[in-house]
Length: 235
Image 1: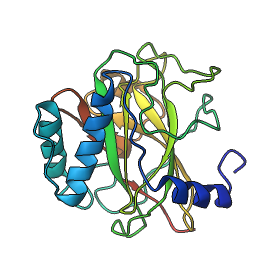
Image 2: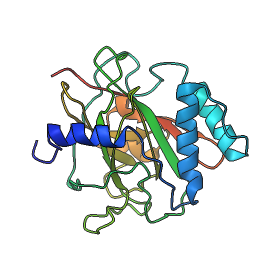
Image 3: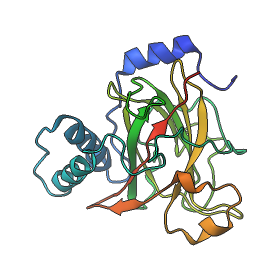
């Protein structure tokens, strides 16, 4: 599609970035970025987590959740992740970053993490490109500013794992809380979908929601955690 990166840009970016960027969150300084990075590193390598309060607990929680290759996310039966509407607020060209709360919105940080996998739900798609965007707590999208607030792009790492830090999106008429996500990997069908959250009263009235895309959020010390695995069909 015209709004996706070219294959050359995809491969150059994957080689240049080599996975998840380490960015500090404006909401809580470096702490939110540290929570995300420590959680991912501990889960992947089994390395000792930092032993200082919230970071240590967060890394331990994430490591416990990472034992299953495919967590209890949107594709528990090894099916291609369901697509969903792009909606009218997609903006191509968002900056490469995995902390999208660039204005420091004061809500509780939300970390979404998971794997991008091939159609067997086992093979990691290293270097897969993800593009996310969402409304702020008031239900408003940043459709014009130069800082692309609550929008970002990033690559899955060598194990197909990704993570990003944000805040819980707000409500606006006709829609429940949701985060938009695009995923692209060489040799696989591009996906446009949405992430929804369990227990939201507005879920019952949203015309676009797919139950397969609903994930629970787990409260941690200093942030909430959601796991959303992405399974792409072969092209």
